[in-house]
Image 1 (cartoon, rainbow, N blue to C red):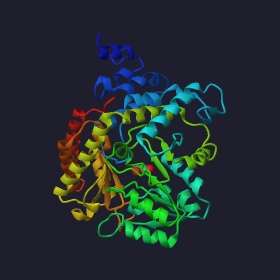
Image 2 (tube, rainbow, N blue to C red):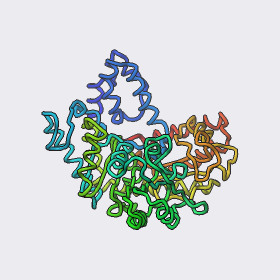
Image 3 (cartoon, helix red, strand yellow):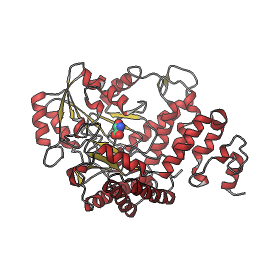
Image 4 (cartoon, rainbow, N blue to C red):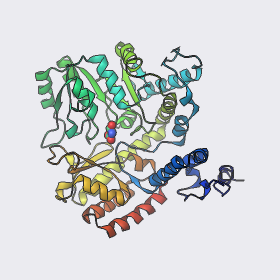
Length: 452
Ligand code: DSN
Protein backbone atom coordinates (compact mmCIF):
# COMPACT_ATOMS: atom_id res chain seq x y z
CA UNK A 1 0.00 0.00 0.00
CA UNK A 2 1.44 3.39 -0.97
CA UNK A 3 1.95 6.17 1.55
CA UNK A 4 -1.02 8.14 0.33
CA UNK A 5 -3.38 5.17 0.43
CA UNK A 6 -2.10 4.17 3.84
CA UNK A 7 -2.80 7.63 5.17
CA UNK A 8 -6.17 7.70 3.49
CA UNK A 9 -7.16 4.33 5.00
CA UNK A 10 -5.90 5.16 8.42
CA UNK A 11 -7.52 8.53 8.69
CA UNK A 12 -10.72 7.95 6.85
CA UNK A 13 -10.45 10.09 3.74
CA UNK A 14 -11.55 6.99 1.79
CA UNK A 15 -14.99 7.12 3.28
CA UNK A 16 -14.74 5.26 6.57
CA UNK A 17 -15.38 8.46 8.47
CA UNK A 18 -18.91 7.72 9.62
CA UNK A 19 -19.06 11.12 11.27
CA UNK A 20 -18.91 12.78 7.90
CA UNK A 21 -15.36 14.11 7.95
CA UNK A 22 -14.55 12.08 4.85
CA UNK A 23 -17.42 13.60 2.92
CA UNK A 24 -16.17 17.13 3.25
CA UNK A 25 -15.03 18.67 -0.03
CA UNK A 26 -11.39 17.99 -0.64
CA UNK A 27 -8.84 20.58 -1.61
CA UNK A 28 -5.29 20.00 -2.76
CA UNK A 29 -3.33 16.74 -2.73
CA UNK A 30 -3.92 14.07 -0.11
CA UNK A 31 -0.42 14.78 1.18
CA UNK A 32 -1.36 18.39 1.79
CA UNK A 33 -4.14 17.55 4.12
CA UNK A 34 -1.93 17.28 7.19
CA UNK A 35 -4.05 19.80 9.02
CA UNK A 36 -7.17 17.96 7.88
CA UNK A 37 -5.75 14.62 8.97
CA UNK A 38 -4.99 16.06 12.36
CA UNK A 39 -8.51 17.39 12.45
CA UNK A 40 -10.23 14.01 12.36
CA UNK A 41 -10.22 13.65 16.16
CA UNK A 42 -11.14 17.31 16.25
CA UNK A 43 -14.07 16.69 13.93
CA UNK A 44 -15.30 13.92 16.20
CA UNK A 45 -15.15 16.05 19.31
CA UNK A 46 -16.03 19.46 17.86
CA UNK A 47 -17.56 19.48 14.41
CA UNK A 48 -18.05 23.25 14.41
CA UNK A 49 -14.38 24.08 14.96
CA UNK A 50 -13.32 21.25 12.63
CA UNK A 51 -15.57 22.67 9.92
CA UNK A 52 -14.01 26.11 10.38
CA UNK A 53 -10.55 24.54 10.12
CA UNK A 54 -11.54 22.68 7.00
CA UNK A 55 -12.91 25.89 5.51
CA UNK A 56 -9.70 27.72 6.38
CA UNK A 57 -7.54 25.04 4.74
CA UNK A 58 -9.70 25.39 1.66
CA UNK A 59 -9.54 29.20 1.78
CA UNK A 60 -5.76 29.19 2.05
CA UNK A 61 -5.37 26.61 -0.72
CA UNK A 62 -7.70 28.43 -3.10
CA UNK A 63 -6.65 32.06 -2.62
CA UNK A 64 -3.50 34.05 -3.32
CA UNK A 65 -2.04 35.26 -0.02
CA UNK A 66 -0.28 38.57 -0.62
CA UNK A 67 -0.36 39.99 2.90
CA UNK A 68 3.29 40.92 3.45
CA UNK A 69 3.36 39.77 7.08
CA UNK A 70 1.91 36.29 6.47
CA UNK A 71 3.44 33.04 5.32
CA UNK A 72 2.87 29.28 5.15
CA UNK A 73 4.90 27.20 7.60
CA UNK A 74 6.23 23.69 7.08
CA UNK A 75 4.40 20.67 8.47
CA UNK A 76 7.34 20.19 10.86
CA UNK A 77 6.76 23.66 12.34
CA UNK A 78 3.03 22.98 12.66
CA UNK A 79 3.63 19.62 14.29
CA UNK A 80 5.89 21.12 16.94
CA UNK A 81 3.46 23.96 17.41
CA UNK A 82 0.51 21.61 17.90
CA UNK A 83 2.43 19.20 20.14
CA UNK A 84 2.31 18.13 23.80
CA UNK A 85 4.91 20.77 24.58
CA UNK A 86 1.82 22.95 25.03
CA UNK A 87 0.96 21.02 28.20
CA UNK A 88 3.96 22.11 30.20
CA UNK A 89 4.59 25.01 32.51
CA UNK A 90 8.24 26.02 32.43
CA UNK A 91 8.59 29.45 34.03
CA UNK A 92 12.21 30.45 34.12
CA UNK A 93 14.97 29.64 31.65
CA UNK A 94 16.90 26.47 30.68
CA UNK A 95 18.50 25.01 33.81
CA UNK A 96 16.64 27.46 36.08
CA UNK A 97 12.95 26.55 36.09
CA UNK A 98 10.27 27.03 38.69
CA UNK A 99 8.62 23.67 37.87
CA UNK A 100 9.78 20.07 37.82
CA UNK A 101 9.70 17.96 34.67
CA UNK A 102 11.32 20.54 32.42
CA UNK A 103 14.11 18.42 30.97
CA UNK A 104 12.69 18.42 27.43
CA UNK A 105 11.71 22.07 27.73
CA UNK A 106 15.37 22.87 28.40
CA UNK A 107 16.37 20.88 25.32
CA UNK A 108 14.06 22.68 22.89
CA UNK A 109 14.58 26.14 24.36
CA UNK A 110 18.37 25.69 24.27
CA UNK A 111 18.14 24.51 20.67
CA UNK A 112 16.04 27.55 19.74
CA UNK A 113 18.51 29.91 21.42
CA UNK A 114 21.56 28.25 19.88
CA UNK A 115 20.01 28.32 16.39
CA UNK A 116 18.82 31.93 16.74
CA UNK A 117 22.36 32.98 17.59
CA UNK A 118 23.70 31.11 14.54
CA UNK A 119 21.10 32.73 12.31
CA UNK A 120 21.92 36.23 13.52
CA UNK A 121 25.67 36.31 14.16
CA UNK A 122 26.86 39.22 16.26
CA UNK A 123 24.27 38.80 18.99
CA UNK A 124 25.56 37.45 22.30
CA UNK A 125 22.17 36.60 23.75
CA UNK A 126 18.78 35.46 22.50
CA UNK A 127 15.50 35.34 24.37
CA UNK A 128 13.06 33.11 22.49
CA UNK A 129 10.15 33.42 24.91
CA UNK A 130 8.25 36.55 23.77
CA UNK A 131 4.77 35.51 22.73
CA UNK A 132 4.79 38.12 19.96
CA UNK A 133 6.71 41.02 18.45
CA UNK A 134 4.74 43.41 20.64
CA UNK A 135 5.84 41.50 23.76
CA UNK A 136 9.44 41.55 22.58
CA UNK A 137 9.31 45.32 22.05
CA UNK A 138 7.63 45.85 25.42
CA UNK A 139 10.42 44.01 27.24
CA UNK A 140 13.09 46.13 25.53
CA UNK A 141 11.27 49.37 26.43
CA UNK A 142 11.15 48.26 30.05
CA UNK A 143 14.89 47.55 29.99
CA UNK A 144 15.75 50.98 28.59
CA UNK A 145 13.01 53.45 29.47
CA UNK A 146 11.15 55.06 32.34
CA UNK A 147 7.64 56.45 31.77
CA UNK A 148 7.88 59.83 30.07
CA UNK A 149 11.26 59.15 28.44
CA UNK A 150 11.67 60.21 24.83
CA UNK A 151 11.59 57.68 22.00
CA UNK A 152 12.32 58.50 18.35
CA UNK A 153 10.62 56.17 15.86
CA UNK A 154 9.07 55.94 12.40
CA UNK A 155 5.52 57.27 12.12
CA UNK A 156 2.90 54.52 11.68
CA UNK A 157 1.41 56.52 8.81
CA UNK A 158 4.79 56.33 7.03
CA UNK A 159 5.26 52.58 7.55
CA UNK A 160 6.03 52.24 11.28
CA UNK A 161 4.32 49.93 13.75
CA UNK A 162 1.74 50.52 16.43
CA UNK A 163 4.11 49.44 19.22
CA UNK A 164 6.55 52.11 18.05
CA UNK A 165 4.55 54.81 19.78
CA UNK A 166 1.07 54.95 18.27
CA UNK A 167 -1.00 57.02 20.66
CA UNK A 168 -3.58 54.32 21.38
CA UNK A 169 -0.85 51.74 22.09
CA UNK A 170 0.78 51.45 25.54
CA UNK A 171 4.03 52.72 23.98
CA UNK A 172 2.40 56.00 22.92
CA UNK A 173 0.56 56.28 26.22
CA UNK A 174 3.68 55.67 28.35
CA UNK A 175 6.55 57.40 26.59
CA UNK A 176 7.11 60.75 24.91
CA UNK A 177 7.14 59.82 21.26
CA UNK A 178 8.82 61.85 18.53
CA UNK A 179 8.31 60.47 15.04
CA UNK A 180 10.46 60.71 11.97
CA UNK A 181 8.80 60.20 8.60
CA UNK A 182 10.00 59.51 5.10
CA UNK A 183 11.12 62.29 2.78
CA UNK A 184 8.24 63.65 0.67
CA UNK A 185 10.18 63.36 -2.60
CA UNK A 186 12.10 60.12 -2.21
CA UNK A 187 9.65 58.44 0.19
CA UNK A 188 12.68 56.96 1.94
CA UNK A 189 14.18 57.60 5.36
CA UNK A 190 16.26 60.76 5.16
CA UNK A 191 19.14 60.01 7.50
CA UNK A 192 20.28 63.65 7.66
CA UNK A 193 16.80 64.74 8.77
CA UNK A 194 16.65 61.91 11.32
CA UNK A 195 20.05 62.94 12.68
CA UNK A 196 18.84 66.54 13.12
CA UNK A 197 15.68 65.38 14.86
CA UNK A 198 17.66 63.09 17.18
CA UNK A 199 20.01 65.91 18.10
CA UNK A 200 17.04 68.17 18.90
CA UNK A 201 14.89 65.74 20.89
CA UNK A 202 17.70 63.73 22.52
CA UNK A 203 15.82 60.43 22.71
CA UNK A 204 16.75 57.75 25.18
CA UNK A 205 15.78 55.12 22.60
CA UNK A 206 15.76 55.22 18.82
CA UNK A 207 13.70 52.60 17.01
CA UNK A 208 14.40 51.64 13.42
CA UNK A 209 12.38 49.06 11.55
CA UNK A 210 8.96 49.12 9.97
CA UNK A 211 5.90 47.20 8.94
CA UNK A 212 5.39 48.89 5.58
CA UNK A 213 8.71 50.17 4.25
CA UNK A 214 9.90 48.71 0.94
CA UNK A 215 13.49 49.97 1.05
CA UNK A 216 16.75 48.94 2.71
CA UNK A 217 17.13 50.30 6.22
CA UNK A 218 20.50 51.91 6.90
CA UNK A 219 21.19 50.31 10.28
CA UNK A 220 24.79 51.55 10.31
CA UNK A 221 23.65 55.18 9.98
CA UNK A 222 21.03 54.66 12.71
CA UNK A 223 23.79 53.24 14.93
CA UNK A 224 25.98 56.31 14.38
CA UNK A 225 23.09 58.67 15.14
CA UNK A 226 22.23 56.79 18.32
CA UNK A 227 25.83 56.90 19.54
CA UNK A 228 26.15 60.60 18.71
CA UNK A 229 23.14 61.53 20.82
CA UNK A 230 23.67 58.98 23.60
CA UNK A 231 20.58 56.92 22.74
CA UNK A 232 20.17 53.15 22.73
CA UNK A 233 19.10 51.66 19.40
CA UNK A 234 16.44 49.00 18.87
CA UNK A 235 16.01 47.49 15.39
CA UNK A 236 12.63 45.83 14.89
CA UNK A 237 13.27 43.53 11.95
CA UNK A 238 9.95 41.66 12.15
CA UNK A 239 9.27 42.00 8.42
CA UNK A 240 12.74 41.47 7.03
CA UNK A 241 14.18 38.93 9.50
CA UNK A 242 14.37 36.15 6.90
CA UNK A 243 16.24 38.40 4.49
CA UNK A 244 18.60 39.56 7.23
CA UNK A 245 19.27 35.94 8.25
CA UNK A 246 20.55 35.06 4.75
CA UNK A 247 22.35 38.36 4.08
CA UNK A 248 19.92 39.76 1.50
CA UNK A 249 19.35 42.75 3.78
CA UNK A 250 22.19 44.22 5.88
CA UNK A 251 22.12 43.06 9.47
CA UNK A 252 21.38 45.50 12.30
CA UNK A 253 24.10 43.70 14.29
CA UNK A 254 26.39 45.12 15.64
CA UNK A 255 24.85 48.58 15.13
CA UNK A 256 21.78 48.04 17.30
CA UNK A 257 21.80 47.35 21.04
CA UNK A 258 18.60 45.32 20.73
CA UNK A 259 17.10 43.48 17.79
CA UNK A 260 13.50 42.33 18.01
CA UNK A 261 11.53 40.31 15.53
CA UNK A 262 8.50 38.17 15.03
CA UNK A 263 9.17 34.63 13.87
CA UNK A 264 6.25 34.10 11.49
CA UNK A 265 6.75 36.55 8.62
CA UNK A 266 9.68 36.15 6.22
CA UNK A 267 11.26 33.89 8.86
CA UNK A 268 8.46 31.35 8.17
CA UNK A 269 8.16 30.04 11.72
CA UNK A 270 5.34 29.88 14.25
CA UNK A 271 3.67 33.04 15.54
CA UNK A 272 5.95 34.51 18.15
CA UNK A 273 8.73 36.93 19.05
CA UNK A 274 12.47 36.95 19.61
CA UNK A 275 14.93 39.39 21.23
CA UNK A 276 18.63 39.52 20.47
CA UNK A 277 21.05 41.65 22.46
CA UNK A 278 24.58 41.93 23.85
CA UNK A 279 25.84 40.30 27.04
CA UNK A 280 25.51 43.51 29.04
CA UNK A 281 21.73 43.67 28.54
CA UNK A 282 21.04 39.93 28.67
CA UNK A 283 20.05 39.70 32.32
CA UNK A 284 17.64 42.62 32.18
CA UNK A 285 16.08 41.46 28.91
CA UNK A 286 15.43 38.03 30.41
CA UNK A 287 14.05 39.57 33.59
CA UNK A 288 11.67 41.87 31.70
CA UNK A 289 10.36 39.00 29.59
CA UNK A 290 9.92 36.71 32.61
CA UNK A 291 8.79 37.57 35.23
CA UNK A 292 8.49 41.18 33.99
CA UNK A 293 5.80 40.85 31.35
CA UNK A 294 5.08 37.15 30.79
CA UNK A 295 4.39 34.05 32.83
CA UNK A 296 4.77 30.52 31.50
CA UNK A 297 6.55 30.40 28.16
CA UNK A 298 4.62 28.80 25.29
CA UNK A 299 6.87 25.78 24.99
CA UNK A 300 5.06 24.39 21.94
CA UNK A 301 5.79 27.64 20.13
CA UNK A 302 9.39 27.65 21.34
CA UNK A 303 9.79 24.09 20.02
CA UNK A 304 8.36 25.28 16.70
CA UNK A 305 10.74 28.26 16.71
CA UNK A 306 13.63 25.80 17.13
CA UNK A 307 12.36 23.86 14.10
CA UNK A 308 11.91 27.02 12.02
CA UNK A 309 15.35 28.37 12.93
CA UNK A 310 16.81 24.99 11.97
CA UNK A 311 15.06 25.22 8.60
CA UNK A 312 16.31 28.78 8.15
CA UNK A 313 19.90 27.63 8.63
CA UNK A 314 19.64 25.33 5.58
CA UNK A 315 20.85 26.44 2.13
CA UNK A 316 17.29 26.11 0.71
CA UNK A 317 16.19 28.96 2.93
CA UNK A 318 18.59 31.31 1.20
CA UNK A 319 17.14 30.31 -2.18
CA UNK A 320 13.66 30.86 -0.79
CA UNK A 321 14.54 34.38 0.39
CA UNK A 322 16.19 35.20 -2.94
CA UNK A 323 13.07 34.01 -4.76
CA UNK A 324 10.86 36.08 -2.43
CA UNK A 325 12.91 39.14 -3.33
CA UNK A 326 12.97 38.31 -7.06
CA UNK A 327 9.21 37.79 -6.96
CA UNK A 328 8.63 41.11 -5.21
CA UNK A 329 10.70 42.88 -7.85
CA UNK A 330 8.92 41.06 -10.69
CA UNK A 331 5.50 41.87 -9.25
CA UNK A 332 6.52 45.49 -8.67
CA UNK A 333 7.71 45.85 -12.28
CA UNK A 334 4.56 44.20 -13.64
CA UNK A 335 2.32 46.54 -11.65
CA UNK A 336 4.35 49.56 -12.75
CA UNK A 337 3.97 48.47 -16.39
CA UNK A 338 0.21 48.61 -15.82
CA UNK A 339 0.40 52.20 -14.58
CA UNK A 340 0.58 51.76 -10.82
CA UNK A 341 2.88 54.08 -8.91
CA UNK A 342 4.80 52.36 -6.16
CA UNK A 343 5.86 54.29 -3.08
CA UNK A 344 9.59 55.09 -3.45
CA UNK A 345 9.50 53.69 -6.99
CA UNK A 346 9.97 50.01 -6.19
CA UNK A 347 11.19 47.58 -3.57
CA UNK A 348 14.38 46.21 -2.02
CA UNK A 349 12.61 43.58 0.04
CA UNK A 350 9.54 41.34 0.15
CA UNK A 351 6.89 44.06 -0.04
CA UNK A 352 5.64 47.05 -2.01
CA UNK A 353 3.18 49.84 -1.39
CA UNK A 354 0.87 50.61 -4.27
CA UNK A 355 -0.37 54.20 -4.61
CA UNK A 356 -3.82 53.72 -6.15
CA UNK A 357 -4.17 57.44 -6.85
CA UNK A 358 -1.78 57.06 -9.78
CA UNK A 359 -4.20 55.34 -12.14
CA UNK A 360 -7.39 54.87 -10.11
CA UNK A 361 -7.87 58.16 -8.22
CA UNK A 362 -11.40 57.30 -7.12
CA UNK A 363 -10.60 53.85 -5.80
CA UNK A 364 -9.66 53.61 -2.13
CA UNK A 365 -7.49 50.93 -0.57
CA UNK A 366 -10.61 49.65 1.16
CA UNK A 367 -12.49 49.29 -2.15
CA UNK A 368 -9.57 47.51 -3.80
CA UNK A 369 -8.98 45.19 -0.83
CA UNK A 370 -12.66 44.17 -0.86
CA UNK A 371 -12.90 43.55 -4.61
CA UNK A 372 -9.64 41.62 -4.64
CA UNK A 373 -10.76 39.43 -1.76
CA UNK A 374 -13.92 38.52 -3.68
CA UNK A 375 -11.64 37.45 -6.51
CA UNK A 376 -9.50 35.34 -4.14
CA UNK A 377 -6.57 37.76 -3.97
CA UNK A 378 -5.79 38.69 -0.36
CA UNK A 379 -4.04 42.00 0.32
CA UNK A 380 -4.41 44.75 2.91
CA UNK A 381 -5.27 48.38 2.48
CA UNK A 382 -2.46 50.57 3.74
CA UNK A 383 -1.73 54.23 4.27
CA UNK A 384 0.86 55.62 1.91
CA UNK A 385 3.16 58.38 3.17
CA UNK A 386 1.34 61.75 3.33
CA UNK A 387 -1.95 59.98 2.60
CA UNK A 388 -4.92 62.32 2.56
CA UNK A 389 -7.37 59.52 3.20
CA UNK A 390 -8.06 58.09 6.63
CA UNK A 391 -6.65 54.70 7.80
CA UNK A 392 -10.07 53.06 7.35
CA UNK A 393 -10.05 53.98 3.65
CA UNK A 394 -6.42 54.68 2.61
CA UNK A 395 -5.03 55.38 -0.85
CA UNK A 396 -2.75 52.38 -0.87
CA UNK A 397 -2.35 48.64 -0.81
CA UNK A 398 0.50 46.73 0.82
CA UNK A 399 1.48 43.67 -1.18
CA UNK A 400 4.09 41.05 -0.25
CA UNK A 401 5.46 37.86 -1.78
CA UNK A 402 6.60 35.57 1.10
CA UNK A 403 3.53 33.31 1.05
CA UNK A 404 3.23 32.90 -2.74
CA UNK A 405 6.95 32.13 -2.85
CA UNK A 406 6.44 29.40 -0.22
CA UNK A 407 3.94 27.86 -2.65
CA UNK A 408 6.63 27.72 -5.32
CA UNK A 409 5.55 30.64 -7.50
CA UNK A 410 8.15 32.49 -9.54
CA UNK A 411 8.46 35.61 -11.72
CA UNK A 412 6.15 34.27 -14.44
CA UNK A 413 3.34 33.81 -11.93
CA UNK A 414 3.99 37.29 -10.53
CA UNK A 415 3.21 38.79 -13.94
CA UNK A 416 0.00 36.77 -13.96
CA UNK A 417 -0.88 37.99 -10.46
CA UNK A 418 -0.29 41.61 -11.52
CA UNK A 419 -2.61 41.09 -14.52
CA UNK A 420 -5.33 39.64 -12.27
CA UNK A 421 -4.99 42.48 -9.73
CA UNK A 422 -5.20 45.03 -12.54
CA UNK A 423 -8.23 43.39 -14.10
CA UNK A 424 -10.14 43.54 -10.82
CA UNK A 425 -9.18 47.08 -9.83
CA UNK A 426 -9.52 48.36 -13.41
CA UNK A 427 -13.06 46.97 -13.60
CA UNK A 428 -14.14 49.09 -10.66
CA UNK A 429 -15.36 45.98 -8.85
CA UNK A 430 -17.50 44.65 -11.71
CA UNK A 431 -19.14 41.40 -10.57
CA UNK A 432 -18.61 39.53 -13.86
CA UNK A 433 -14.92 40.44 -13.96
CA UNK A 434 -14.47 39.38 -10.34
CA UNK A 435 -16.09 36.03 -11.09
CA UNK A 436 -13.84 35.43 -14.11
CA UNK A 437 -10.73 36.37 -12.16
CA UNK A 438 -11.81 34.15 -9.25
CA UNK A 439 -11.86 31.16 -11.60
CA UNK A 440 -8.37 31.99 -12.87
CA UNK A 441 -7.11 32.43 -9.30
CA UNK A 442 -8.45 28.96 -8.47
CA UNK A 443 -6.61 27.50 -11.47
CA UNK A 444 -3.35 29.14 -10.43
CA UNK A 445 -3.75 27.98 -6.82
CA UNK A 446 -4.44 24.41 -7.94
CA UNK A 447 -1.06 24.38 -9.70
CA UNK A 448 0.77 25.64 -6.59
CA UNK A 449 -0.56 23.82 -3.57
CA UNK A 450 0.55 24.95 -0.15
CA UNK A 451 3.47 22.69 0.75
CA UNK A 452 3.72 20.47 3.79
N1 DSN B 1 0.35 43.26 11.85
C1 DSN B 1 1.69 43.11 11.36
C2 DSN B 1 1.80 43.46 9.92
O1 DSN B 1 0.87 43.17 9.19
O2 DSN B 1 2.81 44.00 9.49
C3 DSN B 1 2.67 43.84 12.17
O3 DSN B 1 2.56 43.48 13.51
